[in-house]
Image 1 (cartoon, rainbow, N blue to C red):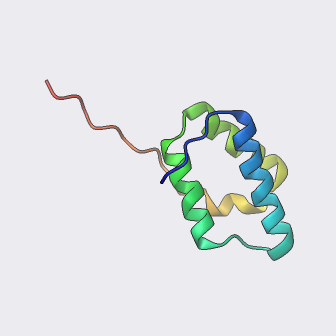
Image 2 (image 1 turned 90 degrees about the vertical axis):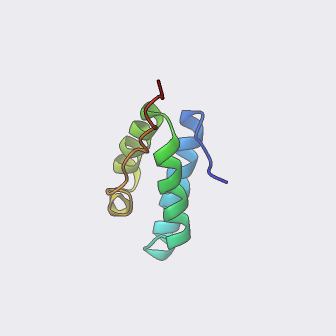
Image 3 (image 1 turned 30 degrees about the horizontal axis):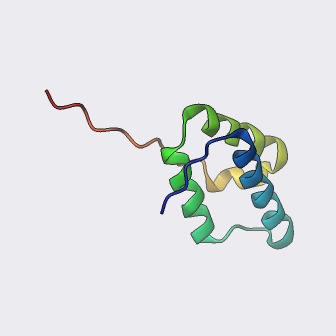
Length: 79
């Protein structure tokens, strides 16, 4: 099940987790990266922007894992 962030606190907790993993191992597990990418695709633009801003501030080395994420396009409404 895909997680959707609902607050800046959830975003900051995700970045804190990324920071801890990077400091301990120097890399992020593929399964974790994919989970965060999926969350980025479905979360609001404001929270996604906060994620990137906080990530650059706290752990810029991890940005490479999330630079190719694009927002999911919603299907056009049927008329």
